[in-house]
Length: 194
Image (cartoon, rainbow, N blue to C red; front, side):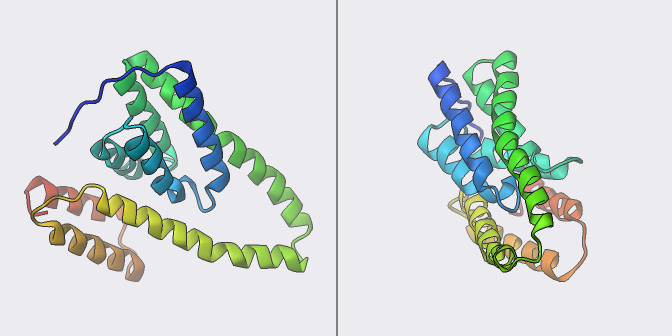
């Protein structure tokens, strides 16, 4: 069930949102999707600027759409802005969240890639690259857990978990396109199977 949120954001709130996305940008090793657990905590649990449904829909729509998957951040900003007023605040929300998530990581990536390429044979550089892999995997597991558990229902919850496990296995063991899995999930939800 969708519940509309209505609130007013002051400039301090917008600045807080921008600062949060600046920080998340620095943590987004493996992509912005790896920080969705923290985004959920900040936007849904702590500030109540998004409902769990809006949060999950932002990610699902962006993942199903063509283009970079970081667009889910823009949708989150859009939804926060729509909840805070209307079209103009929604556009401002997109601007705040996208500049916040892109500016630090883009700058750091550019500078680090140049430095790393020049020093790629150094042992500390190779060790850093090897050490980051388990951190990225842990962040992605955290994201999966947050998305799977934030929209649970009282009845039929086991069906959602079963669908998630089957989807994970299909992704891991086959080359089935993600859009096909999203379509199947949407149809299962449409017909009330899950």
